Picture (cartoon, rainbow, N blue to C red):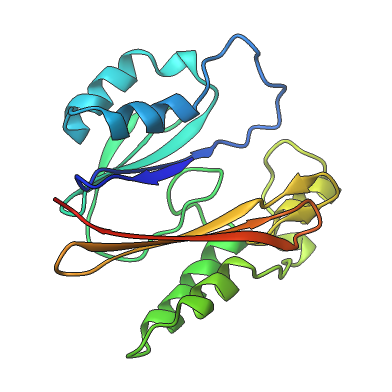
Length: 201
């Protein structure tokens, strides 16, 4: 789940991979993003409220804030972390867990933004990277080794499961926002793309 508003509120959430069956009684994690984007609470206040009901949800990671401040919260890390300027990676474990896809993604991203003129196509090419690491580099998250291998690249492509969308959000010094998104079918083929632009007010 991912979103940004015209008032500058931002939120992105990933599931925490634990290799256990989902509990149908748990509340949808998508509401965490929706409620922050549509609400007025500052990030610290929102995190305090979220902490009180964190067990209602399956495991999650939340990046949220505004163009001026960013925070990380997880109901598996049980702490609110202010995000300072820098390059970070988030997948389906806690922030900056050194999974191969995180290490590779951060390196590729650093190379892209080192260029004077950053191309959107380069960012989407990074998000479509499907290089799989060596067996010895795989994390253990409670799924089979074979499935772990299939889940290991940045862009996941498995029959009936995998990456369905990739998004890029750019915010300049004048608070102009550009939101790009590409959608994919079950085979990894691009089927749709969207572009939105607005200024934070």
